[in-house]
Amino acid sequence: MTQTFDFIVVGAGMVGAAIANGLAQHHHTVALIDQGSEPAFDPGQDPDIRVSALSAGTERYLRSLGVWEDILAMRATPYARLAVWEAPEHPVSRLLPGGPPRTTFSAADLGTRHLGHIVENPVTQKALWDRATDHEEVTLFAGSGVDSLQEDDQSVTVTLDTGEALTGRLLIGADGAQSRVRQLAGIGVTRNQYGQQALVASVRYRGEPEDITWQAFHSSGPRAFLPLHASPEYVGESWASLVWYDAPEVLSELKALPAEDFLARVREAFPQELPTLTGVSARASFPIARQHAHQYFQGRTVLAGDSAHTINPLAGQGVNLGFQDAQCLQALLDEARRLGRDPSDPELLERYQQQRRPANGRMMATMDVFYHLFSNSVTPVWAARNLGLGLAQGLPFARNRVARYAMGIDEGLPKPLETLLSRAPGLKRLVGQL
Ligand SMILES: Cc1cc2nc3c(=O)[nH]c(=O)nc-3n(C[C@H](O)[C@H](O)[C@H](O)COP(=O)(O)OP(=O)(O)OC[C@H]3O[C@@H](n4cnc5c(N)ncnc54)[C@H](O)[C@@H]3O)c2cc1C
Image 1 (spheres, rainbow, N blue to C red):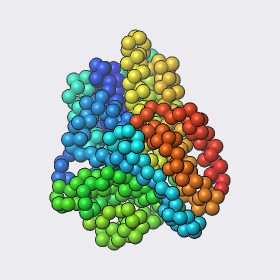
Image 2: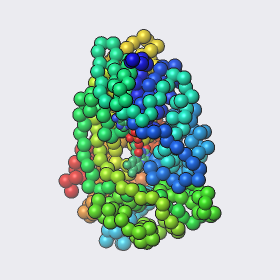
Image 3: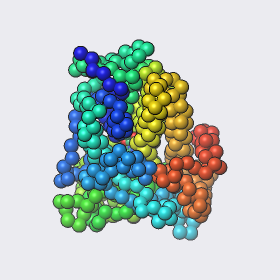
Image 4: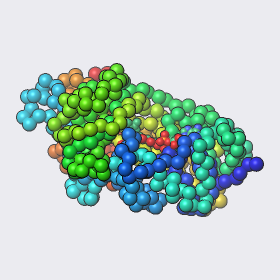
């Protein structure tokens, strides 16, 4: 027997589960499908390897869904400062008094209490699953993958690999970078694999949780520190997530090292700002790719989150962009109902695409510029990026406006900066040629 809903959401990752909650808050009925099982949380467990820096804008959104307090009650680490600098590897940098310039953003300068929170992905996902199951409008199908989809003038029907059939007015694909929904809808992607990969390690260090996250750029890739919670087991120690971007063969070798040897390599390679490490619990590496769907909708299917776009994680923007897709889509679907329109009306979905695709593309292009600028040791490029970092530190107004936008505190950039960023693809090509 086919079950009928207003919406079918495939993928109950952070983005899909948020969309289901947002729709249920406005009394739409939702089938929420995920091939995985319910995320679990135990306060004694080591941190999950997958963590995200959630912006102030994301915090506001998750509060509106009623899950932010649940996230804080599990585990979330606020940070009030963010620093970026280039490792002094270039021969010319030794000639600079005080070394290469460093850009530091602080919550106090931006007039906020914190810049964001580092949260383990399963914590955010669990809070959203728990809240979704509180809504009687949401029916969760966990442990079920999508097998096929069919649509007609009135509705779209998906068949699960359990054999169940579900019908709705619109299918929302939030099933991640390898999206089956995107494939079934026949939507293509443009994909560029970066030369670097990211090795993530959960480490323990001596001291209370730090309130700073930092990233040092090396020519082989950035090395980053993200603070996590105090260890409940080792008194006086805290957890952190380290990210080491480098060539895949370097990261394979690092991953295979015994724990003590790995920590020794990290101590050697990371900047002196790294606190005293005492242990490592988990290590994993991730390929990084820029991927953008050619369209965000097709017929009665629309994409959101990583199924529509994946971005270089170096500025921690991926899921924050996905949550912005979610908010935009929810607002348009509410409007459709108010006006009595079909939620798959192409004019409506075109508006979603017009609002989200260029915005996501701009952020992707900006990350590409960073990637190419900082993975290059040619002297003019080195000089340009250090001039840029120096200017960024020296021009507090412009710097703070950009930071407020990147951290989700402000909705938009000042016009001249918006124009500059919209030209980023050209800048990227220029950098690529050097
Ligand atoms: C190293 C690294 C660091 C990162 N750091 C940050 C950061 O600091 N800040 C940030 O904002 N982002 C960060 N990101 C990106 C962020 O992790 C992703 O953008 C985010 O997880 C995407 O969420 P999503 O819900 O769209 O997709 P996913 O998290 O991929 O969830 C997709 C869901 O769909 C389900 N699914 C898949 N296929 C099917 C199917 N056929 N049927 C049913 N269900 C299915 C899966 O089980 C999963 O639950 C990072 C990424 C990496 C690799």
